[in-house]
Image (cartoon, rainbow, N blue to C red; front, top):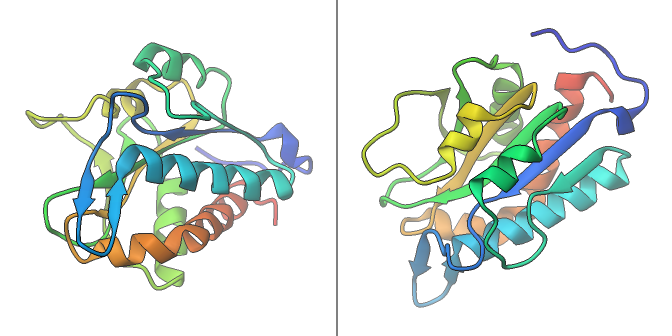
Length: 191
């Protein structure tokens, strides 16, 4: 998919999906120095990303703005007519690194630009690949990426809450938002 230059950034529609919410806690860190709950972390990060994108004149909305349950169908409906969907997650499994997934029917241009932006900020990107056949214990949000009506989409795991990444998660939110902005500007040629 080729992205044409859009002189008016507000024409680019972006939906940011903070996973979880309400009764859906997601992954958690129980380190004695930092307790991270996925649903809270990704909401805070998503709000920071939205604020930064709006300050740079992008049309960015969230699928949720508070700690509430939002159904898969409500999230999916918000992707209609959207240029880009970013679904924010954390991971668990005592590993390290950011992981980026995109749907097999979408191109990898934005995903690769995001990977390079994270690496430019000094973050380890463990993988950047197509979302393949779901594993047995897949979370409920991967179908959102597969079935999204957005022109391009990514699912981003910012790190592993039960491994050494929790330290980076605590201080990295601002740079994660900056990396997202850089990838969007490179992809949509708006810089």
